[in-house]
Image 1 (cartoon, rainbow, N blue to C red):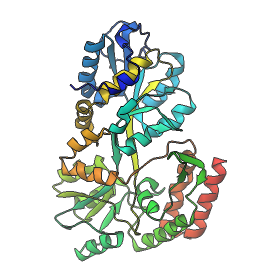
Image 2 (image 1 turned 90 degrees about the vertical axis):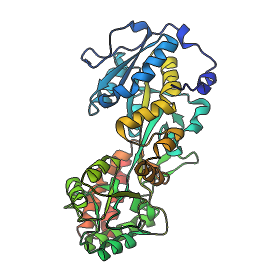
Image 3 (image 1 turned 135 degrees about the vertical axis):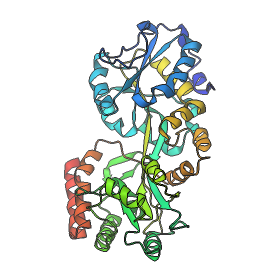
Length: 409
């Protein structure tokens, strides 16, 4: 495998193999751990159980090079964050944990993650991946995957991409479809899937500071563009283009059975469409305005525990082994999600499906990881669902803005 030496030099040439390492031990109930080893020279790494095999090569290469054993512990993705927050302060947690960038606010608030030094390898990552890995000006995550939604188009029904939202609906209607377009909503709404349309009206959730960090004191959801979006959303609800009766399963069925030609969803649903025999093309999200429709980007990566005694080794393993094209492509094969490393992303994009998501992701923005985002989720979807179902757009959006502002304060 290829080993990246640039950041290692940036750390001043420290020789990890010569350091006596007192690593954090995995919890006693983690039976997915690799074989027993000397705890004084071991990095314990918690990962999604489905990605253990993808990391074995990097772990073996690092151990062979440095003499430091890497103990890969497969964990339930639904429990890994809470287990890490609970165990890290006790010293019983891992040295490294795999997770999502939107954990950063909570992890930072709890003081359980340490900064990562990327050195001059920082420029090797997709910009959105690097931005998402940074919190309050400090990098805390080594990114390995970027995920965003895009339009899945049935190319047998609609041969060419839509140029706008209205054009998408018109193309579907011209093809004889009563439901040209589907996107999951549900009774409580789904603002994640509607966010691209909101951004097209110039209404991000939060503004950003000079360094691109989200500013919780700059709530933009209630600006003029937000009210324009609300009015548009109400009109689309009345026209039947958004429907709270359509959840994820219904949206999938309508697309896979040919009732809809356009489906706004993520890479996790591509196999369902292709398995159904749909000739799938991946398109940019058609905007309702002249501005780009920017979806959220979710970035996955690895964090170093603030309680680890092996921070230098952990940083070295992540930057110089996980942060290589070979390993990022191994992780891509395990999850089929666009790699965060630009070189690996470009290689993966030989697949036109992946290339399509990469193109759309170039306009994506990181989902805010700041704690104030919790106050937004609490009210956001319910307000949008009400507007889709006929509530007054202006009054409902104003109440959303007021509720979120009060919750943040």
